Length: 187
Image 1 (tube, rainbow, N blue to C red):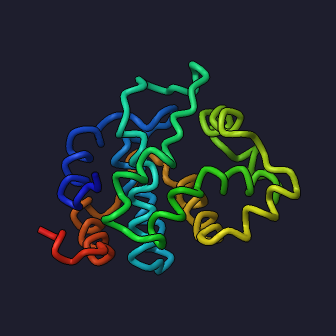
Image 2: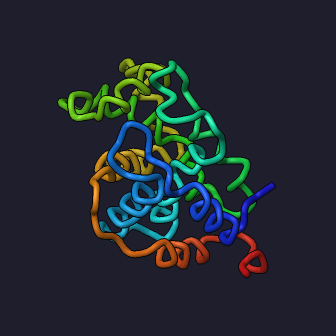
């Protein structure tokens, strides 16, 4: 069942105050910072929405704090898709679906990228399949939405600053409403 924008807002109200695993920010702070970074680069409504919602899957389960410490990959990039499909189209969903593989791609293709990852991100990388080899990297970047997923991944990596000022959730949800597939789904 697809979540409405109002239900997404409620999910952030209920679970957004939880800490973002292994980082000094909450789930909501991370989402807002990611969206703000996208907006600062004049990204489209779809990309700002993808940045806001890319880690929604973390809030759709209860695996406790920092599941990577227990060797668990929560496959959050896929967990959110059934809840967002029907509300948003591929310009929002593809970057969300591919943002984990974008990390694997960037580790393979960008010098120094792996070293700059947080410890939790390095742990999750191993659980998510590790660094792409050359052939995997080449195949990844040819997929629809892969280039946007790389942009999203870079915002994701930079969105872990305690106390960073951002616009409120309502600001970004207004942009998300402009991306809703069925206009009558907007309350």
